[in-house]
Length: 218
Image 1 (cartoon, rainbow, N blue to C red):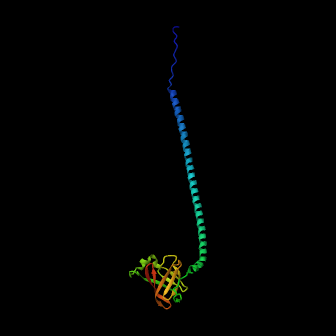
Image 2: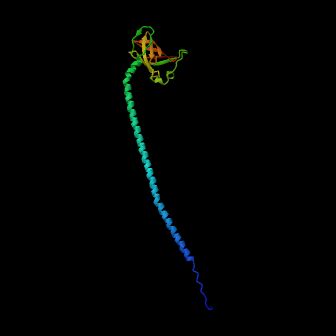
Image 3: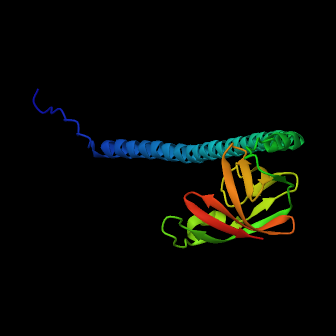
């Protein structure tokens, strides 16, 4: 059939369709990013609030624990002080009996003429090495105890030696002729030689301490 020609359909361009799809994808991606961003911002303060709440709770618990510990220590200290105070008063009540017992010291005698006790306090004024005859400095010989360096005798037959830095620095004594026989509470005996008298009490005497002769006067 001559003269008939079938017209070919024109091809439509696909470029606009691709552009539309790309724009749609970009829009969807933008929406997704925006949603994620908004969700992240809304959760972040919540996390911070949670951390702040946890930290505050921890601080409060620490303070409560410290207060409870302080209160417990205070109560224990108060209880200990009360107990110590009770023990202290109890000790005070027993001190007279203990003192009387500690003074009850047996002093050996030499069979000489006994004389009455006396009240007097004596201080050291010289120390001599009996082997060499040389003087020995008192402060060097007695050390720190020289600050309380006195011997006190009481008329009831007791004495206290301040030159001995020990709890056993007291005891009892007996006067016989020109000798004072003294015995400490630890049963240590010493012999004191009286060099001179004034009325009924010695005015000068010598005590042998640790290899050295120490002279005292009132």
